[in-house]
View 1 (cartoon, rainbow, N blue to C red):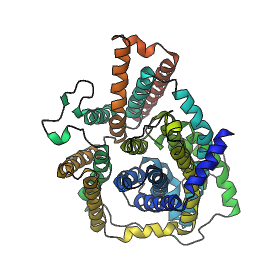
View 2: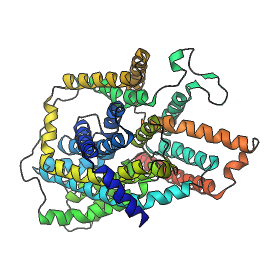
View 3: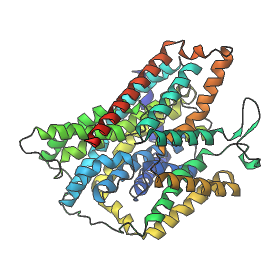
View 4: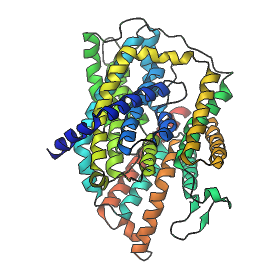
Length: 501
């Protein structure tokens, strides 16, 4: 009951004219960036992060909620229309969604994605309202040992799951940890990895890293392939932009199953929505095989509905885990955590007491964002594809300009532009060699937490490492990590065995 009262208070703040405007602006901008091929929801948040520093914290995070969820729909729009998913979480939507588009059912596919996002997001937001305060109460019991275990779980699980090669995943993680170590050591006051450059004494801004690695690095990657990749794809958008009753009944069970699959993965740090979307797709494919007239491969609506609901329910729960535990479970959540830190806020149990108005207004904005996105994208989804008519050289040149302006505006240091360029080249090299980006972002954001927890634990125990397994919570977390690793190793061994056959 207390959560409902707090949520109604949050609606009072979120429905103010200015905050409502920021929700709509965020949804529009997130979707607009998300539908650009090669970009995606994480890059939308990274690209627009510097633009929010002029806003008050509540307005900024309400806008971010719209950007986050809008970017997810943009990812799916391109996956369906162009077979080019904005990021990994939309890959599963390409299989049946693009098949529907090629068969002349693109509007129905877009409607399926929009309603699936609405169903998954609304259910996840409802669960977060009741679960997040409980998670915050639980995390109040956390000390250095527990936070060290959580950070280690995120490091290892993300690095091993999101990459085909564990070596590449760990290399990305180490790179992120290395960037996080640049600057003055807060414990000893000594310089670390600054190379004597005064501008680096305060460390490397998370904003600079996210814009460089996720946005500008992708621009370089696209520019390197622009002569080899086709300029356009055929789209078929004729037809009714809504679902018939039969199609709705067909998709509804898949939406609910996908939502149920995605909810737990919003708390488990496995790199984002890729795992639950593929699981939802596989469940629907297996169920389809039992039908007398299998539809998969020909544009099965359930094959699109399940992954869409799973991806958005995971995203909604991920925001709950971020607010209550301060634990980012994906690269986009890591950027959101960086945004909180830029405002001097640390997600976790104290956030619900120190900034209760902000938290509950943000949770209320999740529901508003879902309604706004449904209203925007059901009738107007096909209009987003018109952005593709902009010649790609002009489009990506504009993105480069916004990257530079955004980073320079945060500190006004020309050195940051050179740093932006250097890190963007690193991001380009990572893409060329299939090195995942999510472990880098997780290492960058959680690296300081890991280091601080390790040092605090050792100082409080006079150097006894046993303090990190002296309580039940870290032991349970480590056992969960072993289970995750066991499943990963088993899956990789099976894949290798089937490949050898």
